[in-house]
Image 1 (cartoon, helix red, strand yellow):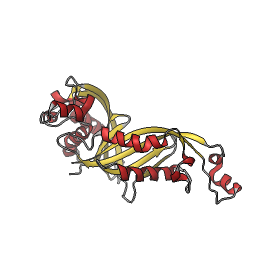
Image 2 (cartoon, chains in turn orange, brown):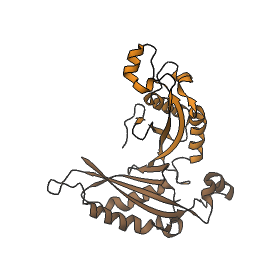
Image 3 (cartoon, each protein chain N blue to C red):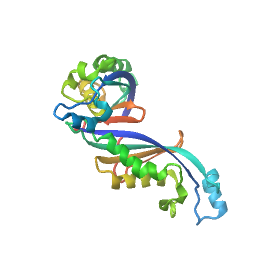
Image 4 (cartoon, rainbow over the protein chains, first blue to last red):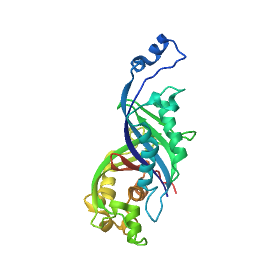
Length: 140
Length: 136
């Protein structure tokens, strides 16, 4: 039987939303407070959903040790307590949580193979959240 | 189509062990969860049903009936129990969150009449949950 397992992680990082191709006024108009040149930070809650046939020998979609290890190595070690704007993936794109969500999905898609990656969901604050499932339709 | 979700909580203990594995394999695969004396969680259950709204009652499902069904089929059996020892399904299945979600689905699905069971979600902790949609 196919089940979906979701694990929630936390990291803290800073960012500044700014596009060099826009004028100062346009950046200010589009990004508002998020355009502050010194940046600002968030506690990002990341939910990773993976799916598989439940292994009858273990009762599991995948071993949590594998998922936690992979997310720690490839996501938390990369993003926690960093300024997102300084990372290569955000050299040519604005580190909005939309873009961050897609980056994290792409990294885990590449690096995590113990179960099928369904979705990445990020809460930037308690009021804002973003979800990305690649080209797949999202299950609710 | 309207979706309705009812929450419930139950507390239970369990441990993970497969008698077909060696003690070393059990320890490697299940880690701390392999302690035979068990350990516990406060589980949160979300049961989502779907259906058309009845034009006379305005309901997708009678919540009182859904609540009674969840109490009878799930909470009476699982709440304050040692899952491995007291719930028949877990004499042959390891009581992982995955198998708990599947078991709850199997207990509820045949008993629901007007509305269809859409999803069973079981939180083992606020940071870990499993969804089951009845897929083979």
